[in-house]
Image 1 (cartoon, one colour):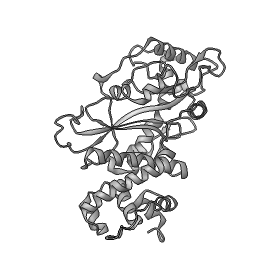
Image 2 (cartoon, one colour):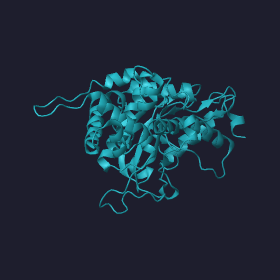
Image 3 (cartoon, helix red, strand yellow):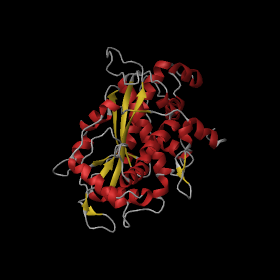
Length: 361
């Protein structure tokens, strides 16, 4: 397929030939008692498992490799891909210039200024790990581990947290993460840009990330107004925020649509599941960096009148949100003041966009 049918090869492995060849450079040396399997074979086995979630016995019939060997191969290849590419493609920004570039991208593409990323979490189904009782059982009644991620305006994952047990909620995972520690650090260890006035205004506003109501609102994280008793500027703010947050929903949707192992119930141990999920995210970012047009038919698009055309991933099974009502997090008064100000700014002459009023009718 690689030499004769490029389209079939891409559908089978989920990678372009150039990227596949680049990853084939990762190989293991022969030993005095056994020759290692060809790197192309090991990579193909792993990619096929990520692409469709086939179990090890099924893969063994396809590739004529024993299931126990396949279990070792998948761990080995996932470790190799992480070691080779993780630092290049998944790196949370740590300089003011990097954060500013992300914020400018959000403002240009989604008309939401000072936004440095969109945050969300999803469940990935797993079989119940041995001797864990209900630790991994989520509020929907199945066992899972959580993938939480911060996504930029171009659907790339900036930061991920993989492996929290399914009984956890968005708020508790975020509250214990290094992301929150960095964003809310008094010493600004992430080097977020200093507060700056929005275009056409003179009131300094901090830089922040956006999320849903599962996260507590504060100076560094904005979430929507509650639906009850909303005024016009509150509804405009929620619409503008939803456009910015759409990138994280699309990123998860594209990821699962491309690597369908995430939509199956994973039978491996939690440690192996974390490796597989991390590898899927790495490959997703590699494709976004090297072949950015690949996912265009999968993501949500907007018509000229700004109505949303649902992406192909929405016609498929999707990953389940982590949030549930009882997990609502607390917020700060400072954060509420900022979203109220943003709501008024988005309805002002300086901050409004021409189509926003018709979108909330």
